[in-house]
Image (cartoon, rainbow, N blue to C red):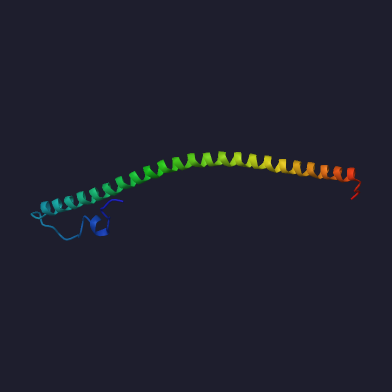
Length: 111
């Protein structure tokens, strides 16, 4: 954030409703204009800093979206591989049980 912290006092450019004589009006108007310029500069600095931060966040969001897409692809691949391993394990377990039964039958064991 900008080094210039916006406070109510810094943003106050008009400080009263006193009657101003015609002779003091130009000086008061100049004072008001200078205060308004300072307030505008402070606001501009803060707005520019916010714009930079928003741009940086948008860039980071794009990078994060790309990373999430990669993670989603990897996760889908992992799920396919896990499903394949589970199926293989089931098929192998079934085959082992059938072979075990066949061996027992061949040995004459009728369990």
